[in-house]
Image (tube, rainbow, N blue to C red; front, top):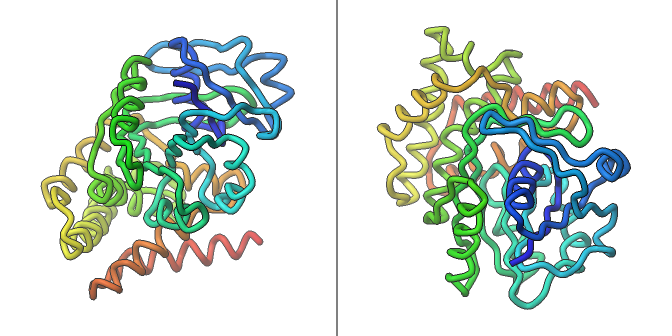
Length: 303
């Protein structure tokens, strides 16, 4: 089984590099980092053991890449419009595309573009960043859950999970809707709040008022998931996410890094879409709706 990585950043770069370091055939698409990586390799500074791929299979154009069994998409979702041109050269009739991205509605939108495509969600539980060319900084965690969205060949999804495990990655096959909404329980409060208050995860939980606000926001997501009939997204899960975050290294989530580095923020899939799904289900998310408005204001202010 061979892999392609589109979006070789903090997430795609980490998982792709782990697979390549374990001996899997991985083809990496680079944009700004291409020349640097060709000269210096791709480095992963990791709490689980650092390593360098001195000569990764690096490309500057998908036209030069082979068709692959699995395409891992690590692009920021604000760039998903590029997939209509990036994906076709990489696809054969059984290719599985795994969207390792944050948000709600990603797979459904891609399916509209490619009706026959086999798609899965990749839910990464990882503290990782890339703030310089050709180097991924992995601070803690690193597991990934794979949720099948539309792949008829269920064994293919199982095989991908097993390959991740063989590469030393904790990986599990999970129910798609449950996985997406569980990720939203963490993503919606922490991504936006670190931007709005210009802080990191640890500071939000160290303050009584923001700790309560974070939990209230989590419970808004839980409420929506329960109205949608999604199992195992409940108060106990929210409490578990609070405790997991307390144990983390102080962390700036991806949206905070995007804001700090003057990149577009992933507001649509992280906030607008789940809030729209909530309204369809007859549920309001007032605290997260307010946070979305604040993020829209901050994003527009920088334009």
